Length: 376
Image (cartoon, rainbow, N blue to C red):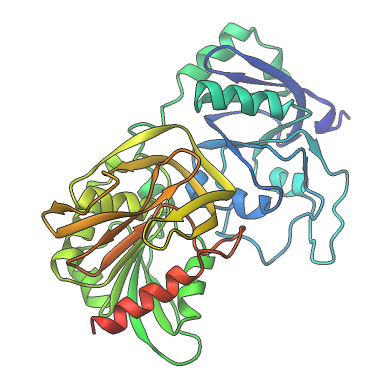
């Protein structure tokens, strides 16, 4: 019997560029949006992050899988990436917490991957041309004519216009209880929430009621008596009108509000700003962000392909009072944070829970708790 890793595989971008490799994980075909992630560690968190739904992730670090898969680092109950691309996977895991190999984990969840790809050349191509649709084909299907495979790739729906919130959101509410002294009760709207996020909030004494994205404004405000949190998530923010309505209800009620990633984009839309697609997005755990007030720079974890189009500079007027851009990315000046000056709300485009990633932004959860206490 032929081992899966010895089968020919091909990665084909929608612009026609092809990369040859070998199958890794499940054998077959998959399509999605090609994006690259720059983290040298944290691949298990990346795989299980719902924000990667519909995307084929290219790991820029060449050696992936050496610590295997453990029972602690999953950010959700399943692998969400549409496909996985690596250059040089570890032959065997070596870590005392490892319970399975990375390839075995991909096989068990039916995730089609490809190895032995020149990921540096692929990343440079995506950086220059932008994120685009891609397919991975392995086994018998990889023998098909390139034109036939390309037709499959270009028929894949674009991430622009993709509404994935209801796909990744929980169907049933659940509670993550406060740890230590009790400091409040909040509603967390699950737009693709990572498990570490309610954990970080609960560690600060908050009862966190995680609610589906389809919840009503009445239920959200009834449950989130002290504050409302809007999570990360995948898809085009221009499609999530219901969530924008939830955020506007929170602002109108002056309920302390904190949004991250997709939740940041929802705050931007609720305030009247547009969103737009980035050329290749920000993904990884080494993105420099500057606080425009303190001038402090934090190294942060990102995973977003869209951004808020808000003016950087003096505060601007919105239907909910004055708002200012609070943070920017130093690589490209993309808006990375918003601060409302007349209602208790703020947001950042990155991941303060940092799973995986640096902990420079961890204090934002403390800022949220202070906002709750100041507005009680």
